[in-house]
Length: 245
Ligand code: URA
Image (cartoon, rainbow, N blue to C red; front, side, top):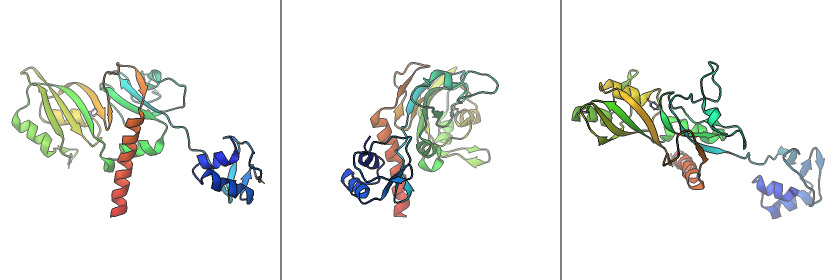
């Protein structure tokens, strides 16, 4: 692309302003000042504005996978078990999972090469909500539900309150939707263990704005623009709170 377009694309100036910078001799390509506006450059060129490297934003990839149970949430397993890497097409750039689902848990898993967004989505302060459908042994009593709503002790510290909704209650097993915004290791399983209703199966239905919907198990899709806009908005809202403080 033309140099002025490159600079505008990189977000350092409008195209008009970039042209001014070029003509004024502030732009170097591969170490040499370039004053001609027609010069064509690409990612392999080193472009500098006033001595500072100007890079195009990385092309990010956001993949939503319906992880099956019996698959490791990692791109490589030294023990040779099945990993999510085998379920995501290698074209379009290397991605890594955002957070983790247990080996036995299925459901929605986001994978990306956008490290900054991945950090935000897994950091507890951003409180991304995750909803799971749990089939558990037995029928929960009112007291059990209250423990979820109040938060319960795990690892010697109190978990945040969870939202819980009974989908089906039976004496042998029950189905519940549970929403948490923490990401402690095996948190949902441990919460149900603590109430003596062990999890028989666990599916993540939602990760922030990304819903599992009818995505078939073992298949993936690109995140939609709407989902990505909501994920980014989440980061902006927390950052804005910081600015207000
Ligand atoms: N909580 C669990 O117990 N397991 C998961 O995979 C995710 C949350």
